Amino acid sequence: MPKKFVCDAVVVGAGPNGLAAAIRMAQAGCSVRVLEANESVGGGTRSAELTLPGFVHDICSAIHPLGLGSPFLRHLPLEKYGLSWIHPEFPLAHPLDDGMVALLQRSVAGTAAGLAVLATIVVISPVLRAINFSLPARSLDMSSLYTWLNLDGLAIGAILAFWLRVPGFSRASLRRVAVPLLALGIVLFAISQRSHFSRAVLSQSWCDLAAAGVLGCAMLLATGPWRRLAANPVLEFLGFISYGLYLVHVLSFAVIDSLFSPKLSSMITILGPTAAMLVRFVLGGGLAIGVAYLSRRSLEEIFLKMNFGPKPAREFRQGSPDIRGLNPNN
Ligand SMILES: Cc1cc2nc3c(=O)[nH]c(=O)nc-3n(C[C@H](O)[C@H](O)[C@H](O)COP(=O)(O)OP(=O)(O)OC[C@H]3O[C@@H](n4cnc5c(N)ncnc54)[C@H](O)[C@@H]3O)c2cc1C
Image (cartoon, rainbow, N blue to C red):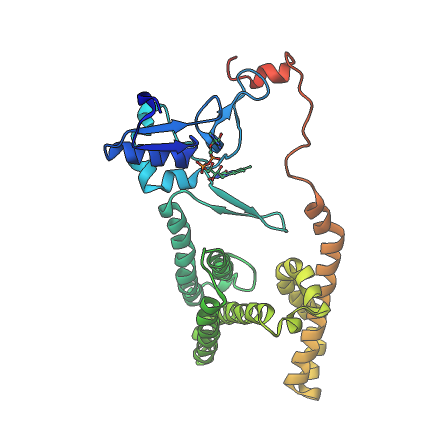
């Protein structure tokens, strides 16, 4: 073997791993020879002008969180040789079926700030309800409508949605939270029954917490050995109309009350309060379900089927205005 080929180590392949190994050995004082079959080094991480001059494409890998996270690569002065990391505003976006998108923010502080706002809403809403109840002028009472007084329901739902997407989330962690939430909802319900004041302040809170607990238990059911119980047409139908139901149910009961309140009052004396309440529930619930179904079928469905995604690719010709507009050299 000619003397010029003698070295401590030979690395075959100048991809990121081969280069890292070669650099590590060179740092330890070994002489290293790197053999690469391609004309340029970099392996899967290379980029090149594959289509038009000025348009640089990734040949293979495109997104490099492990490059940034690698303790070895991080300690190398790669920026000195022209490396610059490009960070998108949102590293991860997960589109959901209903058209909404769950976004991962880059900054832990940004995500924590969002969660802090939600937690504040959960704590402050009962306080606002207490203030609203204590106000002498009841003309400001808006507690029967969906207003800022009831924002904690939405906030608890949003916190739950965040939490379900935390990496490492498991059924065991859901079980640890769902049952205590349900229990807390029941305890608050008992407390809320003590006075008009506690009812005004806590009735929304116990409903929210108990609903979150029931939802968690339903998810446990739907993902466990008894999952067939959750996958049934009635629940699927309620899921189909859930958004409209959420929006319209308060209004539906208000309509039923204003149309039938004298009849419902006389029903209380004739049939008793439980039967009258059941009749009111059936009428209000039926109206809400009907409106929600019509809304989903004739309005929401149209929006959900609208394509807000990327437009189909167009053909670009070299020299066309589109290409000139996109060319980074222009
Ligand atoms: C389509 C695709 C997309 C990917 N996207 C991502 C991504 O977005 N993010 C991410 O982190 N990872 C991604 N990966 C994985 C990533 O590309 C690899 O993990 C990484 O390139 C592996 O590095 P390496 O050094 O081990 O091998 P490689 O990068 O493959 O490098 C091997 C090198 O060895 C050379 N070589 C091979 N045989 C010989 C030989 N006999 N003699 C001389 N030279 C030789 C090759 O020419 C090449 O340059 C993707 C992989 C693929 C296939």
